[in-house]
Structures are given as structure tokens and as C-alpha cells.
Length: 84
Ligand SMILES: [Zn+2]
Image 1 (cartoon, protein in one colour):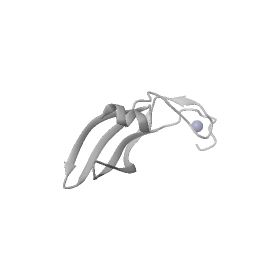
Image 2 (tube, protein in one colour):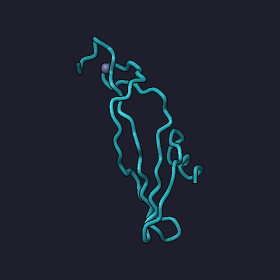
Image 3 (cartoon, protein in one colour):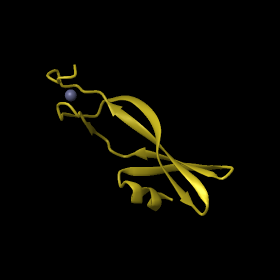
């Protein structure tokens, strides 16, 4: 299962999966330890919040697959950042 996740994105890590009726829910997490601010490009390890989204559904063996990404949002620490 981990290899399948790596095929989608090499920064994703397989956590667990659950099969409910004919749908497979795969929980993944980004393994990036630090994230870059999209506005000032400063890297930060401060995590702002977690959010979940399913970003892909592909059929495997006739079952519907939903990948749930447990992602992190960074909190920019740059005082000169234009978004602050
Ligand atoms: Zn910033």
C-alpha cells in the first residue's frame, strides 16, 4: 500500500486504510518536515493547523478509492512577510 501512495506523491506516507462497503479509504500524511511560505518563501517548521482533504479517487479492483490527506499548514514566522 505504501508503494501505491508513493506513486501518487513521494512525499506522502501511508498511515492506515479502511474499507467501507465498496470504498477504500486510505489515510496518508505528508512527510515534509518543513514548509515554505508561498508569499515570502521563508521555510518554517511551525505548524499552523491540520486539515484533511481527499484529493484523488481511483478504482482498485472494482472498489472506489478515496485518499485522505492529513496535511499541515505552516505558520509564517517572517516579520517582513507580505501576508502578515
Ligand atoms: Zn511568509
